[in-house]
Each structure stands twice: as C-alpha cells, then as structure tokens.
Length: 279
Image (cartoon, rainbow, N blue to C red):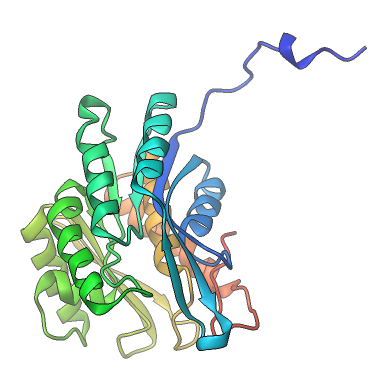
C-alpha cells in the first residue's frame, strides 16, 4: 500500500536559493514575470512572483499595450507572504507601472530591515506602455526617487540609460560606457547598460561597471531587431546568479551568455516580434 503523503517527512535535498521577481504579467509569456520565472528555474533557483500589473497586447490596434494595475493591497499581501515564508536571496524588480505601486513596493522593502535581501536588481522600466504621457512621467519620477536608491544592480536598456545618465544620445560603445559610469556615480549600484542591437556594428554590446571595473560584454548580433523578453531575461539571470553566490561581474557574464542562447532559440509567433526562449 502506498505511503500517505502526510507521513512523508524526510527531506532529500536542501532548498535552492530563493529568488523573487516583482513584475507584471505579459499575457503572451514572452516577457515580464513569465520570462523571469522560466529564467529562475533554468538557472537553478526557486522563483516567486509578486504580480504588479497585467499587460496584454492588442492585435486589433497594432499590438499596442493594454495595461491593468494590480491593487496596492494585493501587492503588499503577496510580498508579506513571500518574505514571511522564505529567506529571499535576491529580488528582481521589473514593471511597476504606477506611482502607487512604486510606493507600495518601496515601503514593503524598506520595512524588511535585516530581512532585506542583499541583492536588489532593478530593470528600470521608465516607459510604461499603455499609460498616458503624464502618468508615465509621474511613474518615472517616482521610480527614480523611491526604487532606484534601493537597487544594488541596475540593468537599463538604451533609452533608460540615456534617461538615467542625462546623455542626449548613445550611439557608440564609448557613449554607453560613459552612461554606465554616470549612472553608477549617481546611485552607487552596479550597472549593466544594455546596448543590444541598437548600436551599430556586428556585435550586441552591453557595458558592465561597478565603480572600479569596466568590461564590455559582446556577442554577435542575431538579426537587427530587438527580441521580446531579452531585457527581462538578462536581469532575471543576473538575479539568479547573484542568489547563487556569483560576483556581479560573473553574474553579468553568465546572464549575457544565457540571453544570447535564448535569442538564438527564439520563439516565433503571429505577432510582429519574436520572444526569447529560456533554455
């Protein structure tokens, strides 16, 4: 006769590192929390998500974004349960979407005290597609004021690197390195500035800077069009590697390799974009 589940008490393996993404759901699964959780699983951590919003593309309107925020109280409830249940090794923060959500997340993290994870990786979504311009500006301002100071590692894309560094344009590797330095000097976090396919040349370039070490990470471009979920996956991979004990530079190198493999193995669809596949 089979042993009842209630009688199984032995533990055969220790817990893996626990990683948390505070992010939105992207309905097609190519980006956001879905991509983060697949990345966490692929890299050997136990992933959780505190859902902040629901985004679905609109096939009838040029595949634009439809954005629905999760209630602030529900976000706070998720975070309370997660931090009371586990010792979280690293957190990734993705799309928050509204000033109220930002305030809710910042307050919850600030109140953790000694339970605050040592690694807070911010993928700074400064443009929340689906919002009116005024609301998007308020969100950007709140993110810089309340979330950026909590971050230990920041992964801005091309546009975000310009916004955070104050540079009017980033067209060269030198510009991207300058942006990484400026962002670090402003917030103190380790920076992995993503050039991707947006800079000219045969390579997709990202720049790592931690205040002393500057390293350019290169991989041959796979096409000339950005792939959905690449930025989410990169930041989630950094988060997983930091949770496992990697140094920031090693985490960045592993994340770059992981994303490159995922872009090569991309998902194709009937939408006008491909998506990273986390192997």
